[in-house]
Length: 62
Image (cartoon, rainbow, N blue to C red; front, side, top):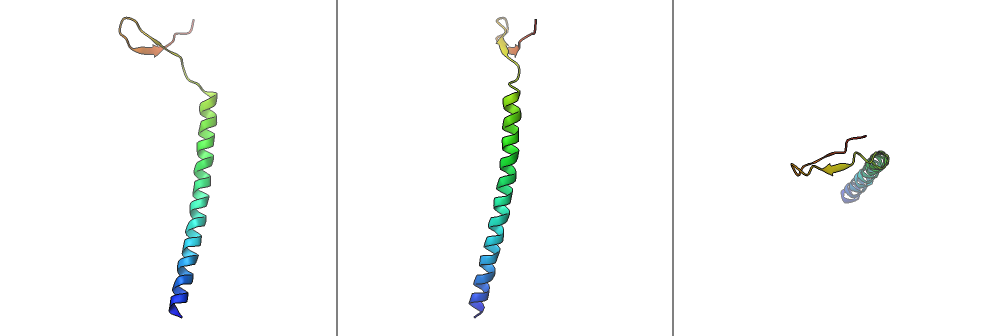
């Protein structure tokens, strides 16, 4: 009989851990999708190569 109680406790703990993990994965997914949306809207600056130094710098707006 104690085996069944232990098995039930282990199963309940596993179920609870699964629910917590699923909730955390959904939270991280929301954060990643929000970051992707922000990144898609902000493409950043265009870089051009400086022929004298060979370094890339942000293009100057004219």
